[in-house]
Length: 497
Image 1 (spheres, rainbow, N blue to C red):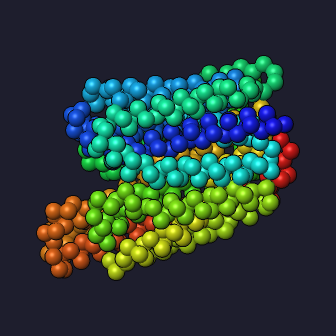
Image 2: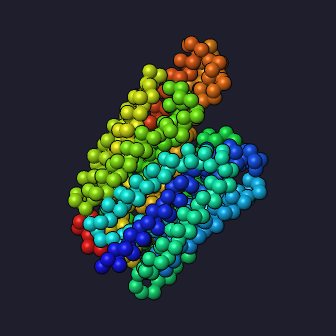
Image 3: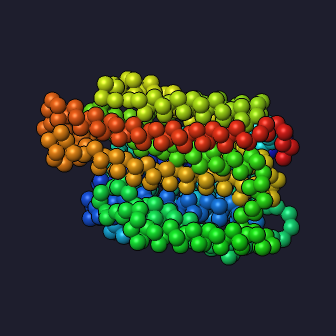
C-alpha cells in the first residue's frame, strides 16, 4: 500500500510540473515579446506568436483526449510533453520570426495534451473522494504559475536573454517525463477500438477555421492587418467552419466508434457543464484582458506595474480553487457553482460601474470579489465531466470540458474586443467635433500631454466603453449560472469509479 501511495505521489508531482510548464508558457512570453520581435525583426507578426499557440493547443485538446482513451493516458501524455519540449528548444534556437511562429505551433501542439490528460490521469489514479482535492491543487498551481509568468519572463529576458524563457522548460519537463514514465502504469480501456479519422479531420478543420477567423477579426493588436466581421475572408472562414461542423455531426451519428460520442452530451452534467464553462471562460478572459486596460487607461497606473495589476484577482482565485476542491466530495456540483457564479456576477456588475472616480484600491477590492467567484468553477466543472462517465470515455469527456472552456475564452476575447472597438469609435469624437481615440490614454507621452477637461473627457469615454464590455461579461455569467442550475443534484460522492 505504501508503495502504491508513493507512486501516486510521484505521478502527481510529475503532472504538477507539466501544468506549471503549460500555464507558464501562456503568460511568460508576453513581457519578453517586445525583445523577441526586435531581435528577430518580426514586429508585423507579433500577435501570431500568441495566436498560433492558442490555435493549435485548443484544436488538439479533444484529439488527445480521444487518443488517450484508445492508446492509454501515459503514452499520449508523454508524446505531448515531448512535443512541447522539442518546441521549446526550437523556439530558443529560432533565427527569424517565421521560424519562431512555426516552433510556437509545435509547442502548442504538445501543450494541448498537458492539461486535459493530467486531469484524466487524476481521475484514474485517485478515488472519487480525493479527486476534488487534487483538482483544486492543480487549479491553484495553474493560477499561481500564470500569475508569476509575466514578471518571470521579463526578468529572464533582461538578465539571461529571451531564449532562456524556453530553455528553462527543459529541466522541469525532463523531471516530469521521468516521474510519469517511471510511476504510471499504462492505462487503456478494454476492447479493440478504432480511430474515427473522418470525424477527427472534420472536427479539427472546423475548429481551425473558426479560431482563425476569430484571430483575424477585431482590433486587439494593431501590429498586423485586421478584418471586419463582414469581410469576405472572415465570412468564408466562418462558413467553411460551419459546414465542416455540420459534416462532423453527421459523421459522428453514423460512425461505429465516433471521435466525440454525441451520447456524452445527453448526460446533463456534461452538456450543461460545458455550456457553463464556455460562458464563464468568455467572461473570465474579459476580466483578465480588460481590467488592466481600465486600470492603466482610466485610473492612470504606470505601464511598468501592468504585470502586477491582476495579482489581487489571481490570489483570490487561489483561495477558492483550494476551498472548492476540498468541498467537492461533500456537496453537489451545483451547490459550489451557483454561489461562485453569483459572486463572480456581482464582481462584474461592480466592474461595469467603475468610472473616472474609481481608484486603484477600489479596483483591487472588486478584483478580489470577482476572483473569489472564479476560483472554484474550473475544478468543479472538470471533476463533474470526468466523473460522469466510465474509464473508457474519461479522456474525451475531460478534454471536451477543457476544450469548451478554452474556445469560450477565445471567442469571448474576440467578441469583447470588437465591442470595445465599436464603442470607442462611437465615442471618439470630442466636444469640438474632432476625432480623438481614447486609446491615447495608454501611451505615457500622449497621456502626459493631456490636461484638464481633455483628459477627463477621454477618461470618461474610455471608462464608458469598458463598462459596456463588463456588462456583456455579466451577461455571460448569467448564462453560465442558468446552465449550472440545470446540472441537477449530481455530486462526486455518487460516483464509484
